[in-house]
Amino acid sequence: DSSKTVELIAGLEHRVEMACCDFDAQMAKQTDVMLLDGGMGHQLRALGVEISGPVGTMRRFLGVAMANLEQPQLVVDAHLAYIDAGADVVTTNSYACVPRCLQHSPDVGSGPIDLDTIIRRAGELAKEACAQRLGRKVKVAGCLPPLAESYRADRVGAFDENLAQYRRIAAAIKPTSDLLLCETMSTVDEACAACTAALETGLPVWVAWTLDENKPVLRSGESIEAAVAAVMKIPGAAGAVKALLFNCTSPEVVREAMPALRAAAPA
Image 1: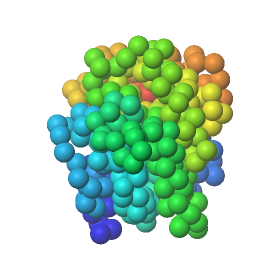
Image 2: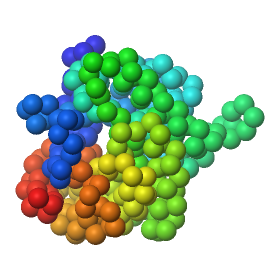
Image 3: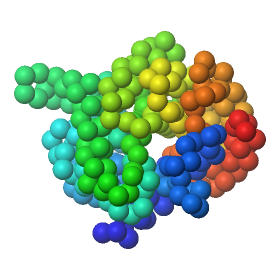
């Protein structure tokens, strides 16, 4: 129901506390507040998608990824629930669409699941939901997620390997996206790899880091100032990185960290 959806948006995911660099004015309401959706995993589970396995593991996300192919209407319904609750931006259900997650899936049809196909399908379903609410003018954020377990800075791969995977994800999700969201980034290098690939598409880019649960630093221990500086040094970032954000972090730490993000962000 709508009250449950509002609760999801407001609390369960803690998806966004945002410091905007220079995002397009037409995307903001007159209040200058832009509301993003909440966690697709939480909402899909509420709608009946099976989610199992330890929190943060790749296996736990498999059901969410497979819903794009096996339960597409539930994915559309999840997006619509957030739109109807007031979201101005919905994020593609492709957080789990990474090689390490899909390797846990059984073969379907003629063989293994194709990464590009399932990512493209996630974008199509987000667009389909937006098309059902044309009067709202909701935007689609194409997701560039962690490539390994969430919140685990120690599991982040080498920059060049990550960049190659992010380029593939960005190319697959670009056609159905209004912007690209590099989200739940745990380290400086992880965010830079994702942002580099995103910038190459020519779309507006948002970068969101996840923070330590006890202090205002990245999960890696790196500073917010270092994270922002590294992203903004990427060629083309000055004109295309439109927002810097935190997500998947306790509200208390986000509140403590926001002054540092505002101070480090370009004016």
